[in-house]
Image 1 (spheres, rainbow over the protein chains, first blue to last red):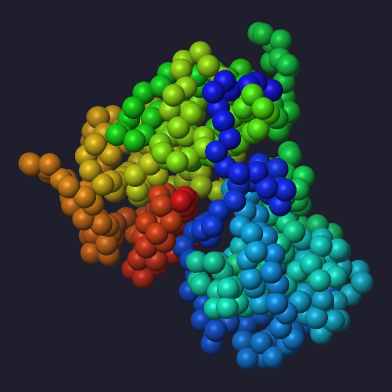
Image 2 (cartoon, one colour):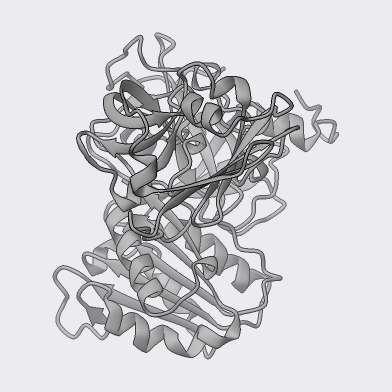
Length: 198
Length: 251
């Protein structure tokens, strides 16, 4: 390690910040391409793979129990945002509805733009993951993944796939879009797992 | 550490660790952007469009890291140039602006595997940059120049003023039959300005880009979030395929 003489800290430290992160009040947008415009009317969520195939439209999906979530989020590009408020349907509920097989080890989340991301089942069970349908009391804006996005706040935010289209339950790990493009396969902010070899 | 003269560090080992890089050259390339060239041993050749993380450590042990796009073309000399915009209230960029040749930072990379241009892609290369967003596009353009790639290239660059156009002189020197460079100024334009003025809009994009549409083009857009969002949306409205458009947003 080298010391950069004269370099001083400008941002406040906070125990809630994972290593290498800084706090932002904004909500930056990061996406790989143009923002897909998905309306509530055209949106549907599909469950496939090692589960009973399901497909719910917006009205059906939002009749499920809705939970309030208040938590911090962490983006791999180093910003963190505290106390963000979301509403969503718990993945536990969805897995119960779709009778997900106990052979499933991973979830592959599919987005409307073709994006995919992989998450171990253990990381989406037990009140750790949701399909979010509201942010700060309003519809989720298109550039932030609306009408519905995955929400897994304990992992870097690229795992919280925007414009969620399908949940595919599989046996074995299938690295997704960023996971095959230099980013870490698991993405724990507290272990600073940003890039493939971290 | 590597023994000088012996390549005993595998790329994957080097890539995963922070390593020391020494500043070779620092030069203003626009009124608020500096080009910083670093030398690092066993540097891995980057792909045009990739970035590095640069990290600073204070005497108290506090560390801050930020991502910066590479502006230089891939080369085998271990030199990497970044284009860094000064954010006056920022934590890292003001320090980098004052960094003197011979001083060092730590860096990690090259990183990023989507906003990259592979010169074997068949069609025209369309680059759209807002302000310092032109930096990763510069790496693509310089790569095409260095390898004398015979390909239609269009760079559309939006800046507030002439003084804020990064790499202006160099860009001018690249203009030829197949390399089109078009500037538009969103703020004041000087007397006799021959470029465009105003924000990039649908009319302009349709006029400039429609002829490339059937030729398997790739479009790279980099700049502030709103700039990228607006242009990408407009292209989709004009019938462009989202698979032809790659974006990088900041701020």
